Amino acid sequence: MLFSSPAGARHDYDFDGWKPDGAFHYTGEGQVSDQIFVRGNAAVRDHLDRGLQLRFFDQVKRSVVRSLGEFRADPEHPWYAEEARDRLGDLRKVIVFRLLPIDAEAPKVDKAGAGKPTVRDVPMEAHRAETFQVEPKRDPTIAERREADLVDRYVGAVTGEGGTTTRKETKLPDLGGALYTDLFDGGRAELVEAKSSAARHHVRLALGQLLDYARYGEHKSRAVLLPSYPGSGLVDLLHSVNVACIYEQEGGGFVRLDP
Image 1: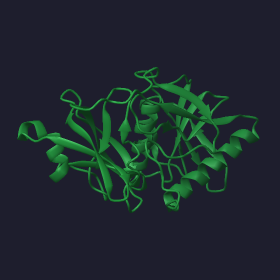
Image 2: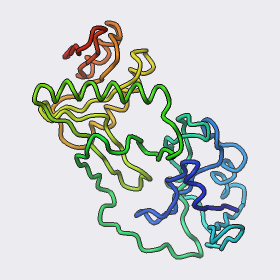
Image 3: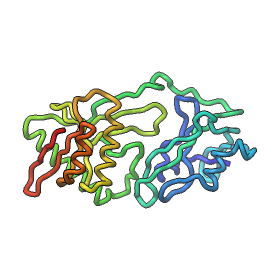
């Protein structure tokens, strides 16, 4: 038996709901660290092989649910991975199942944008989360504050030279949220991804995110923004895929290393 309720949004389960592909997208179980295929998650994934039926219910009010009927995981594309916060505020991987109704009728969902990513410019203060919603009551982590402050200082440097900055919002088909770049430098037509540390893990993460964003929308260049010099090896890594390295100097100001 599977249950969905508005309370799930408090655990960042905001991927749940009917999507234009005709499936109900349903976040797996596990509120701390990465979700894995054990217990209920394994049962949903393997329900056809195990001879199980998936009965789905949604919440009407407290302690009252209604049956939506029997569902099955899409045999062609049963699940996909997304990112969300766990109940401790840490970013982790979640499993999102694509469930098809068997004896229930899917509601009519606007399919006009299905299969077509849409990209638009949004103000810098637009929602910073990417493919997840941050709880309003959750305070930003130290890393998030440092990253936001770094972006603010760089925006000040760009606009101080007469440049313009926005963010790129990319909405993908069947995605619960949207993808947001940290910055789009309008004068350079450049996508910029920022990180709070110049350590290897952070640089690699920034590079992966940047290459993901770069698949959508027009741009002329790409750059990773860091709080300090990451070292020649990581600069070479960025340059090897035509990505610039921008870092902040100790005395203030930014250094740009183009590929």
